[in-house]
Length: 120
Length: 293
Image (cartoon, rainbow over all chains, first blue to last red; front, side, top):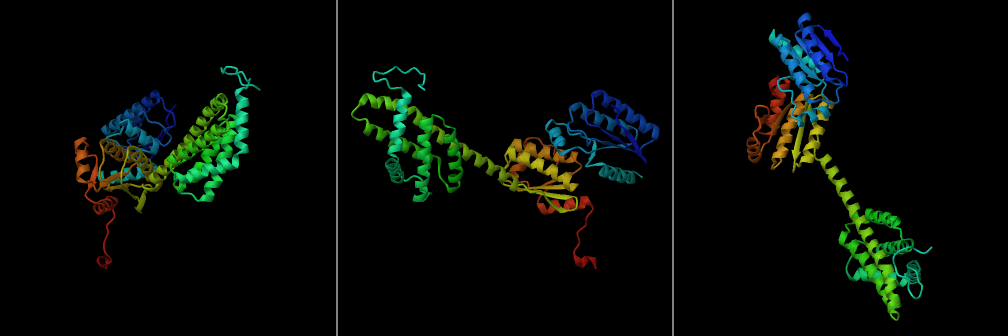
């Protein structure tokens, strides 16, 4: 299942669907970084609103995505983590440390816009 | 229909169910008198002091009839239902478990005495009647007591749930700013409920900063301290920053002891300081009217 990646100015938005396999996640990781390079994006938003469960593999992949994208000079924000998912994650010790998070797409865009201003 | 069991067939040829019928008939015939005696014993032993004489009499009538019916039909569902219904009515009046068990046992005694009186000339028959009566009477006492306790436990659970919900309000004091004042004892269950309520509040109110004030919390064990850390981390996943205020010296000690990474936790001395910090984070500046002129 492919994850749709949309372009919004200098930001790429990848929207997770509900059930993503490990293969899908791996594909997303390489796909997103390629797009960032190709389109010279400055920011990436990964929208996980539709995810009702987050396991350790998904969590690790998200962190890897953020790190890889940072190496390209771009910033990643994870948005849309549901309250129940957040609760389950911290109980398992999956804190997405080092990765920016925001409530939803709107907040994610606001965060990146601010970040771009600060860098400029 | 005669009941099949291991009882020896007796010279007089009476089956246990016949005995039971005789017993029930006796209890019905002497209903008024036996009920009187029972109510008398209840007031002598000073049970059910929370109820008036009229109420005791009314309930005694119902209990007596249910008792005899249970003996007669040898089924206890109706009695169980009645016991729970009765409990629902009298628990709010402050009636205690020992009172309910006490009055049922008193009734058992009153009825047993009347059987002694009736069959005193025929010891063998008395024995057979008691063989029929005792197991049933004990089962009745058990059913009523258990029904009462179950109802009590249900009420306690309900009240605990209500208290938990009442005591953890999530308050919005500014746009994007929530305050969660915690007061009293936090057990792991309450801590969990707090976290769930807060996360829902963050999403509903689109909060960017949350101030959790624990001035009203005297002590916190390691489990709950960990819950607090988890709450901070989970809030971050929803894009909100948490400021914890009002840590007592004891709680500060606990947090240091469990090795909480204080870099991860934003703490300020008191609630006022916490709100001021939150406002700064949100880009607010509070000035007096005099200053704005």
